[in-house]
Structure formats: structure tokens, C-alpha cells
Image (tube, rainbow, N blue to C red; front, side, top):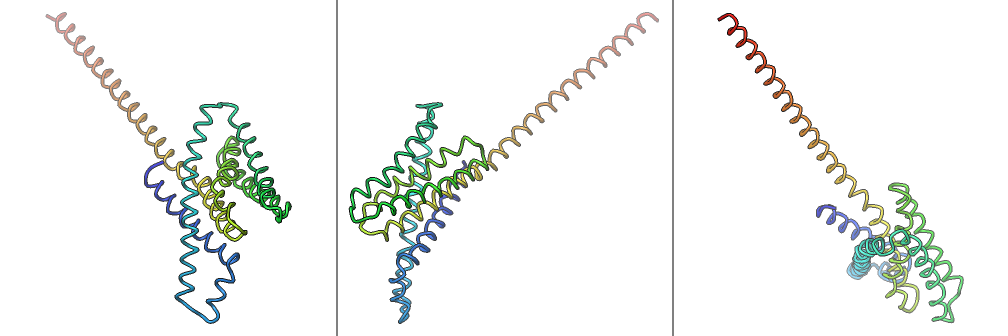
Amino acid sequence: MGSRNVVKMFLRTLFFGGLAGLITSFFVKADQYRQYLSPFDFKELAGVLLFFLGLGLVFSVVSQTGFFAYLFIHRFGLNLFRSYWSPVQIVLIAFVLFDLVYFPYIGNEDSSLHTHVLIAAGILAFGLIIAFIKAKETNKSAFIPALFLMVVMTTLEWVPGLRTEGSTYKWLMIVPLLVSNAYQIIMLHRLQEPEKIQASEERRQEKAKKKEQKANANEKAKNGKSTKEGTNKNAKKKTKKS
């Protein structure tokens, strides 16, 4: 991917992550907004908006760091496990989903098991949707890596949020992470395709140019040979007449 597309994807991911964090704050921090709306306090309200927007931007950067780490891990896994890399990813996905339910439940006895099951199921469902879109737009082999990113890498990025008390900042972190990772995995091949098409077109034009040059060279050689044969015939005729 060219540097221009890297910068483009970085800025767009930053935008969507920040926007996702801000929108999430409207639901999980509604009371904080409400106290500055009645009576209306513009400065405080703007400060709260900027704070949650900045929080979303930070989590978007975390997502992008994890995404580039995932690209390295995926390449390393392919080289190390080869054809077994897909089964290894499936095992890791299952293990992480189990951890999302078991350890938070054990660590907090007051929490409900159903809540943790629903959270894990929600992440898995969203990951399956994104993986299906990725596989549909590219090929079937992209399904498991995309699901691995959406479940395993997102959960690893979410670890600091899982350690916080209460659910507010967990939601403020997981939503931007999911949105940012989904955007990156979907846009990766879309940004690469124009470059591949351009490179393919350049190779095609180069081949056509070489073919044309070769045809011209053969034509010149053929014309030169015909001219030489004609000259030799004329010379022979002149010799006979003499």
C-alpha cells in the first residue's frame, strides 16, 4: 500500500473511531450531558464533547496499533504454521471468547453470567458479519483472519477497559475499537486494489510496448532482407548482360 493510502486510512479510521466514541458517550454518559443542558452551559458542554471525542480518538489509535501488529502476526503465523494457521486461529478465537465469559465472571462475583455471555456473543456476531463481508469482497480464505482480528485482537486491545470498575468506560472503549477495526479490515483490500490494477495496467502496457518493438524489429529485418535479395538479383542480371 502506498504512503498516501496509509495516511488516508489512518485519518479516516481516526475520524470514525472518534465519532463512535462521541456517539457512545451520548448513551452511557447521558447524565453528564444533561446537567450542562439545563441550565445550558456552552463551555462545559463543549468541554465534555471534546473530552469524549478525544477519548474515541485515543482508542482509535490503539486500534490502529493493534491492526498493524495483527498484519505482522498474520504473516508470521503463515510462515510458522503454514496450512495449520487457520485451525490455530480458530482455537485462539474460541479461547478468547471463553476468557471473555469466564474470567470477568470469576473476578466479579456480583456480575451476572448472562451479561458476559451476551458481550462475548455480541463481539462474535459483529465479527462474523465483518468477516463475511471481507470474504465476500475478497475470497473465502480471508474469513478466519478477519474474524481473528475482530475477536482476538479487539479483545487484547480492550484489556485496559476490562480492568476498570463499572461498565461505562468498557463501552466507551469497545465501540470505537470495533468500529475502527471493522473499517480497517474492510478498507484494506479496497485501497490496495486500485494500486494493483494500476500496477497490472503498467505491466500490460510494458509488455505491449516490448511486443510492438519486437514486431517492428522483425519487420525491419524482413524489409532489410528483401532489399538485400532484390539488390543481389539486380547485380546478377547486370553481370549476365555484361
